[in-house]
Length: 69
Image (cartoon, rainbow, N blue to C red):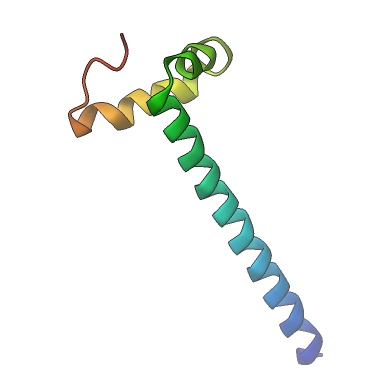
């Protein structure tokens, strides 16, 4: 029985790692797009204002003021 559980645990672990990698890559891609394009920020403010607020709260402590304008 232990031999069948071990491959299942490895598959689950690999799946979790893939989901984590995709999530981190997606967050970086979205942050980079919002950081470089005012049009993307404007679209985000209309469709997903909570994500834009998280972006602003993460950028302002780094000293990058004036991004909201």
